[in-house]
Length: 62
Image 1 (cartoon, rainbow, N blue to C red):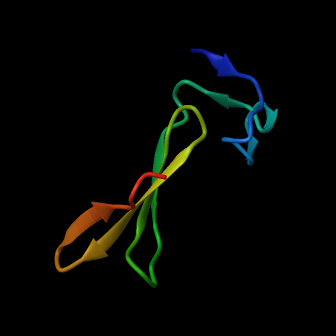
Image 2: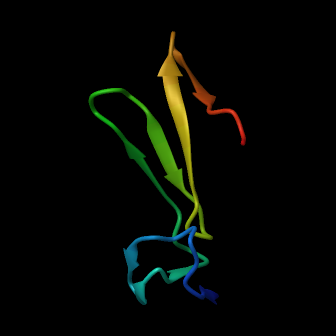
Image 3: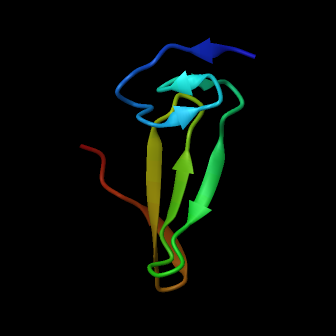
């Protein structure tokens, strides 16, 4: 397991304290209203996928 120092990517209160994350901290959450699925990656960043016409599409990268 690898612990990662606080960054702007992980602005949440994790098991190691505010902003800290770890290598197994991967999760998915679905917004019940919109159907959007948000994946929280191991580095604390989040990627959203929008449900449209029976498929999921990632938002355009900036």
